[in-house]
Length: 449
Image 1 (cartoon, rainbow, N blue to C red):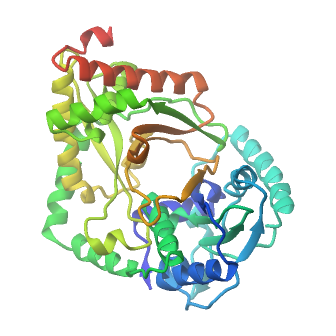
Image 2 (image 1 turned 180 degrees about the horizontal axis):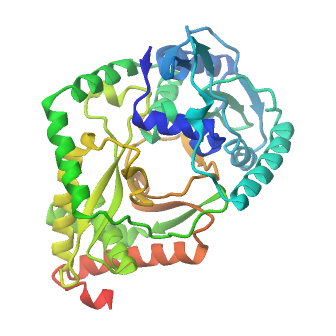
Image 3 (image 1 turned 180 degrees about the vertical axis):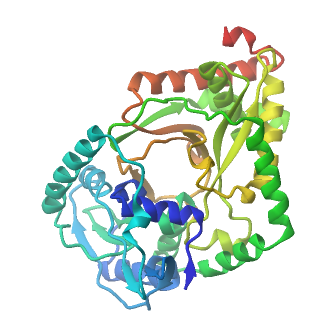
């Protein structure tokens, strides 16, 4: 049993405030062949047996919150029959919005309810959340989920005329995007007759505890604090106060021709695609904000070892990156600054201790890069389903689809951000990408004017 770390506490706090829907990761895995239900059951059970994070339970004890693990017990997973993949996706779009109820037990004095109080929300927000909860009641009723048992992960086995597979819904408090791919790869490996190796998340937590007691932590903390001191002004691209927790996912595709040019440019200039995309987002922010210094959140995968890469758990950490971009910088100079700032931030990011005075509302945009591949079975079809709920933040994800030779851009946002603004974001980022590739020595001044 161990205490939750910062990112997990953020998720736990959100659930206690009724925002559990915002912490869902849901997807389907379909294989284009028929597989016996008994084999699907065995593979799913083996995944749960191997990964203790999928059996997590939370303990509120004497004003602290801990994560414990329930003993493994074989279970009979629900089997659902569909006539087509389209029917699966229709189900997944709704199923992926129904919150998981965290398994919680109380010991000792538990945790005071005062712990979960937040700033007083607007009456409009309260009203809209209440309406949403009323509608969600009927959604749960229709989907047979009113009395669902508490769990951090659910498996539903899928049976179609020409496909077999599973739908997985997992709570973000014990998982990240890498975890979802890991579980899919494990499930497929087992179905194909292979074996899997999983690791204990508590080992990662113990290493984190040792780090926070080290001199390295003090140096990292000092660096992060020095970065905060350079720019006390918050970075809000969409400063309007949110009136609902409802959200949208918008997507755009970078065509194969531009994707090939991006890959060629990165190879020639020895930069990563993430640095290139991050530079384009930075130029977009520099124009929108019209100031030299600003923050953005970059997502650290935080999985450096083989064991961590094969562990179910919440490893992702948000890294505040301070950008300092002059109006006469060239695109190449911007790219160099972004690369330098990112490297330094990732080197010291563990010193970013969120404290009540400060940094939890420093910026409203996160930029993430996903290139995890489903290598256990290239014939598998994986589909993600968005939770359609979010707090007052936005997430811009660059998804590398190397097998398809393209990049996908995904933008998850509160509905206070309009479709027009999202389209502007996509168009601008792609336009800047082209400018960087065409002439990196050109000044950004013309673009900013």
